[in-house]
Length: 238
Image (cartoon, helix red, strand yellow):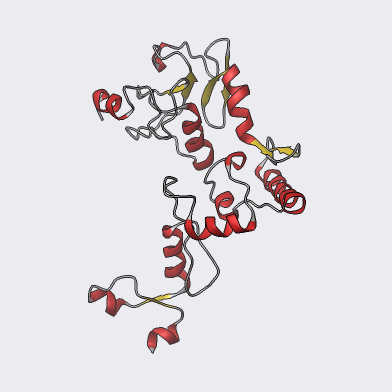
């Protein structure tokens, strides 16, 4: 993708190409792209282990996030995990952040808080303790506010837990069935018609389940009727 195309897509380099937020803070990559905000880079690297540039797919071991639009990645004096005063390095994702931005915008993303009262639990320890803290948060939401997180969104790391919606039972059922509205790009978690009410994160996971737990008719497939599944072998034979 040329720089001209990137500038055109990102409204002349003023908005993030992923979330379209204002690019006041941007990620600088060794592949020389600075059109993605720091939060979107962090989401890809921390939640999904994806260190590839969203634009050119080059793998980047390090990214610098700051507000100086004029400086490129190569302009910073890098010595190991240091690039000078005023930056914080998070080694698990290979990212350097402006210290103020890290404290005000990035650290809160890792909080496990209620968002409806002062209850909060931090997730700075290992994955096992983090899972326990998420369960504690879910227990608190259910018992104190009659709210819930979508467990599928939590398990598949749709976003940081701090950004996932806290929903009433009615809202949760609508989220599972219909998604979060026409502008969200999310149309709900699909259900297996054989295992109701079991739902899956998306169609890819549903298809994995169908291929593993149920039976597909290959005669139908040869006739152009793809994805004809049956609950068990007896129903397929019949």
